[in-house]
Length: 429
Image 1 (tube, rainbow, N blue to C red):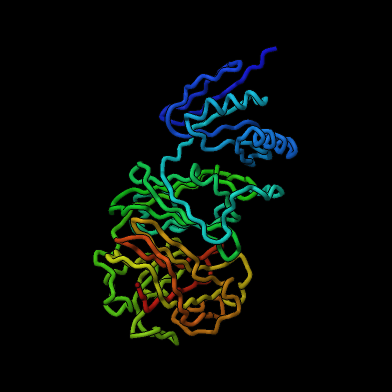
Image 2 (image 1 turned 120 degrees about the vertical axis):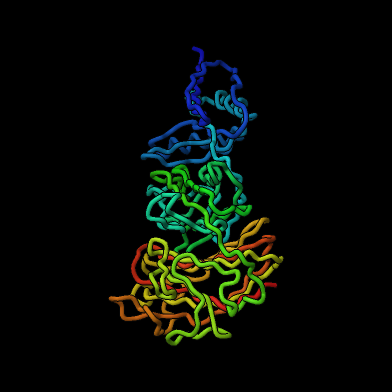
């Protein structure tokens, strides 16, 4: 009896449609442009999925596994249009006949860099059936309203996850749109203090003020067990102009007011307060996760996140040095808990970006000393701790210019108990 290969096309362009193709040893070529995702089966038993994977690999193909509603999907991802027909012919020859094909819609071009162990190149944790989840977003707006939600044009967008993420699922699962059009971006997959993924996205080219930005993380993004998210996540905002003056050597110690400095949330350039003195000079920059802790009228975005953006920086540099002091009311009762306030840095420019975690409550742990500071500790807590001024140096930076440096402090896991990041004595070389 002649075998029939059934191919269902879900071409996600301006029109979605399905088409059944009945063939015997011959595959027509209705595919043009873009990349395609080919699903060769969905299995309730792991052993059946593993047998399918083995057959595909023996045929020279490179399948992946996705978890969806208790089933293991076996997928060939990002197949070039020119390779679709020969791939279908190969699948027919090794006994796969019911196949779903979907056009990959991720038109944005990303350069993906990994730092730490927050991303994996293979799906290995097959005992994990929990869906991948985003636990915190920067900027963490209360609603996705691009009219009322405003954010600096070139600031990083950051997603904290509940697990490691699978590298091969990123490109087709992230959309970066400006006024509805896909743009280029840099994605850095870092590792949080808990070992899970932190995805930082920055635009490759400067975005003007007044543009509508939308970042979509699709539910097809996978963790290290092949688990997808339950739904798409969308972050939308309207861009605003940051500093209109350059950040240069004359203000590296924040002694010249706000030249080249732009705050989002609760942030300010201030002098000595409580028993916190500047590292050098008479002033330092500070941001908090609360309301009017370091400023006179600022509130962190959704009571979670504040930022300092330095730039534009109109000079090339290959290293950055700064001093920071991390202060938190989560010391010491919440050390080791899921409530892990974090401080991060992002450096971006036309040639790329660099992001890394500066510190967090669970990194510092009990290595802090008590501090007296206006507004700290929060009401209901009896202790606020500080790291004291710490030196940080980052080498091998190559982002070009104009460049932007963004410091972020954010609550992860809750809205309670504030943290502060103080920064001073910038050096660019």
